[in-house]
Structure formats: C-alpha cells, structure tokens
Length: 239
Image 1 (cartoon, rainbow, N blue to C red):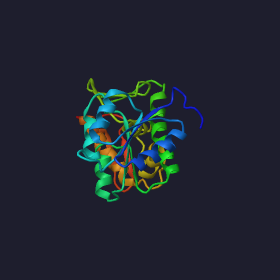
Image 2: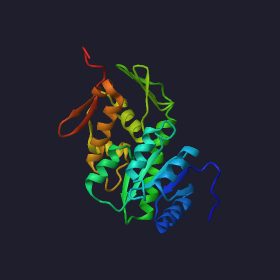
Image 3: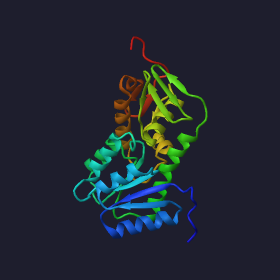
C-alpha cells in the first residue's frame, strides 16, 4: 500500500459494526485519506471537538445516541458545525433521508453499499468544499448579504452565517448566476455532482435550510414552480 501523505485529509468513521468500520477504513485509507474511528455518538463528538476532520462518515443507528442526534450536535457547535457529513445507514425510508438532509448532512448512502461508490461520494463532497474554499474572486454583495468566496464566509446584516460546505456551494452557485433560474437537475450536477441516487428533493431540503439560516436574506432565493430556484439580482424594494 502506498504511504499516506502527511497532508491527506482526515476522515472520522462512526459505526458500531466493526466489519463496516474495517471496510470503510480500508477503502478510504487506500484512497489516500487519514482515518480515525468511533463506535458511539459520544465518542464521535469528543473526537470531532478534539481534532479537525474534513469529513465524518456517520451511521444512523448507533447505541445510546443516534446519528441524527450526533449530526444535530455537530451543527449546533461552533467548533464542528462546518464539518462535512456523509450519512451511512441501512435505513432506506425517505423520511430518514429527508431528516438527515434537513439537519445538514451533505450526502446519504444506504447499506449495503459499493465501496467504490463510497470513495467517489467522499471525493465529491470534499471537492465541493475545496472548490468553494479555493475560489479567489472578490465577494458578492446582494442586499444585506455578502458572500466572500475566498474566505468561504457569508455575512448578513453584519452577522456571520455558519454554513456547511454544501450549503455554501449551493448559495455560491445561485449567487454567481443571480437573476437566472437554475433548474433542480442543473443544481444537482453542479453542487452534488449528480450522485446516482440523489433526488431533486435533496435540493429542496437544502434550499429550505439555507433560507432559514439566512434569515431575512433568505427571501432573496425565489422558488420557480416546477423548475428550480433563482437568487434575486438585488434586494426586493421595500424589503
């Protein structure tokens, strides 16, 4: 096996099934990532607060503290709220998928899964985060909102808004094409890189969460019924 470079991105694998942990760790390690593991939600939170991970592969059905609880705790903590999260679970029901995405998961993969697809999903999430963070053009200002592409930050009325890498990439995509309607399919290709089983509902849930985080500036994102979304080129008059 090739040695892992010191600069490799760190990933935390959280699952109480040793064979799943071994499988995920083996394939991600082979792809060049540096791995840590945790078997419980509490251990995962402690690890995430102790060191900075680029991504967490998180199982839903954990003993004591569910993956949903872990995700909610990650997103509510300033130290961990921006870490990317890939949910990995045997639960295939749509409500579980929607709940995970609405809590801020970046992607969702069900068991049994293809190790090759897992590696591709992880790479796609990290590419989205990296592409956003490496953009060097100056900021975009629309009404009360300023998006700094270089620093990967969003400020509304002088208040910093904490976004996940996927939320930031979604907002940046809409902002860069402000005034133009963006179809859900196009957003899936651009932001999520069209993962095989990602559905248009994913876009809707992320837009809903994004609007909530942006507060009054969330009204800048318009729904174009039957097609997709558009970010206003300027703040609405009288708003």
